[in-house]
Amino acid sequence: MTVKLFNTMSRRIEEFKPLVEGKVGFYSCGPTVYWDQHIGNMRSFVNSDILKRMFIENGYEVRHVMNITDVGHLTSDEDTGEDKMEKGAKREKMSVWDIAQKYINSFLRDIDSLNIIRPTAMPRATDYIKEQIEQVQKLESLGFTYEIPEDGIYYDTSKFPDYGALGGQNLNELRGGARIDDSGKRNPTDFALWKFSPKDKKRAMEWESPWGIGFPGWHIECSAMSMKLLGPHFDIHVGGQEHIKVHHSDEIAQSEPIVGKPWVNYWVHYEWLLSKDGKMSKSSGDFLTVQDLIDRGYDPMAFRYMLLMGHYRQPMDFSFEGLDAAATGYKNIIKKVAVLLQDNTTDTIDEEAFDRWHDKILGAVSDNMKTAEALVYIQELLKSTDVNVATKIKLFEFIDRLLGLQFIDRAHKLVVIETEIAPAEVQEMADLRAKAKSDKNWALADELRTKIDEAGWTIVDTKDGGKLVKKA
Ligand code: AMP
Ligand code: ZN
Image (cartoon, rainbow, N blue to C red; front, side, top):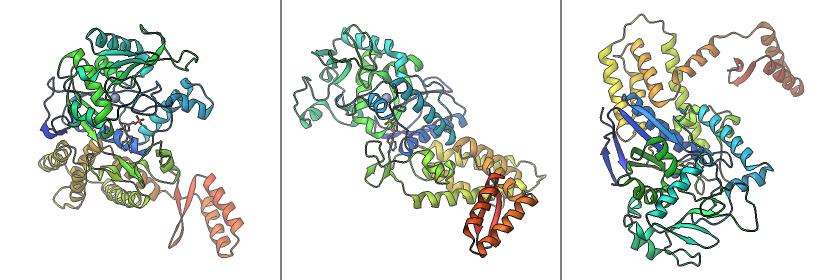
């Protein structure tokens, strides 16, 4: 099936043509592991997961590389400010290495609970210092660098005429708009390739280099690791839209002189998840994690469903009202799938109907990832009277592979929960609790609820009284 994607570089939707028939190589900018990733970050990882699943369902072999940034970037785009990893280490009184491991673990836990397929490779920036130094040396030999004493080795963007093309700006516009500062940079858009450690202080993370002890600049890790693991020319590079103007423009400026043009064929950028005051971000402090949602009783799949109701090129507001609505929508589909699963059908698969619905749904996602349209087709499929139960179930298996929403898994759990009958002693405790409640003996009612809970059951208070549900 034809795959179409919006390419930020050309600013239009293009038909995807792989470099190697049947294969896709893509690189995504991954987490900085100094703190928990929030659900805004997760929006971008879910988008990459959909991109990957869409290619897999179209028969491609996908190689996905996502970096783990465990070197502390400075907190601003301008290579100034505090080192993020050191900031995390100070906050939690741990070493920077332990902080990195702690947040790699929590990141993996979160992507697993969102049913995101793990990348083919997740290289850590600190394991590729040698490759980063080699690239800086190469740029140096090509005449793209200069040194700012006691600061670092910088990239001279005036040497790269296409600088800013990704963001639709040329160098003159960028220079004109930026402030003149006293940083020693030749052009405001220049950026650090290698930073020197301060003379009077030992940094928690620093390495030997031809320019003295220091650490790599922010952008070079992505150029080094993508080329190492995907080759010098690959298909797709993705990331959040805030990376267009600086991070990805800088990656292009570093990489194209090394590999020759073009380095990447398609650039795909995701819009943000917004909280009350704009982009959900760690620095604003107004953020939630997947674990926060779980603690509030939400199924991570309901959050994933909410994300797929939008389009990756549109910002999305986060609110609990929105999440509640999505959770209800998600649950309604599960209930219908559970009914299909309970129907012990002897139907045979209707291949023609299967292909028709399969192509409609995969077609929507292949068309610049229109996941919301795919969700509408799913509702139509559930309502349709001309597709038999066995075919619908087979289609849901495909839908789960494509969208990763685990409809069948959750529907199975629902069937188990709704058919299982509580043991007599649990039922007895529930009856006693109902009596305690009507006697307004809240202490006893609470005590019984705890005991029921310990026995592996939960009382859900419904309008018809307490209902016993086995904990999943
Ligand atoms: P970071 O750990 O900050 O480097 O972010 C990891 C990924 O999450 C990057 O690709 C960011 O572009 C993306 N990201 C950060 N904040 C948001 C947000 N509010 N909505 C969507 N994506 C985001
Ligand atoms: Zn990157």
